[in-house]
Length: 175
Image 1: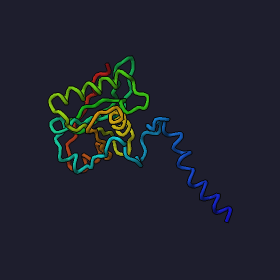
Image 2: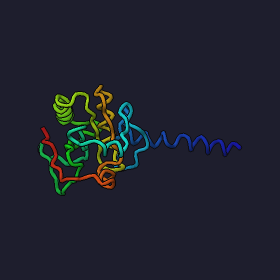
Image 3: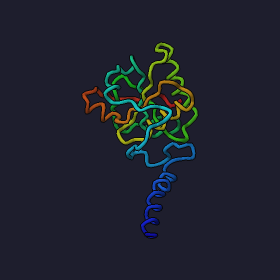
Image 4: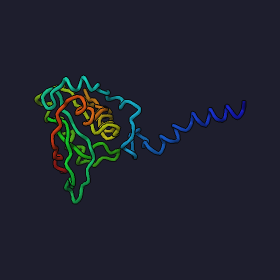
């Protein structure tokens, strides 16, 4: 019986030990970003793919792709084509737990500019399926008090698989 209880305790503590290496102290995913996402980005909310498909990106909601990209000497280095949701903007690297303040300010500025014409309009963050970048960015925005922030878990693959249009993307300038 004691051996069984020890196994139960060990099994119960393994996820916490595993999470400790994957998440920082603030609860943002800090490594292994391409992995199944097993939780909601509270206080941001997860948006169902069907609900997202009912919105016109850029008109009904601001869709923001958080797919990471290499930056060298302040410039994005795009070595292959990246397709994103038509009407979305691509803001690379905003899903890192230690996001560059200039990149974060650029993201916040883009949201503020869009909301001037769309007060209270939803902001939908995404990346790829099984990617934590959109999750991290959505959570950080909501924690900072930005309202109506959502995360699209299925990412570009889910959008495409439900008949949504993808288009070649260019990253927003790294300022």
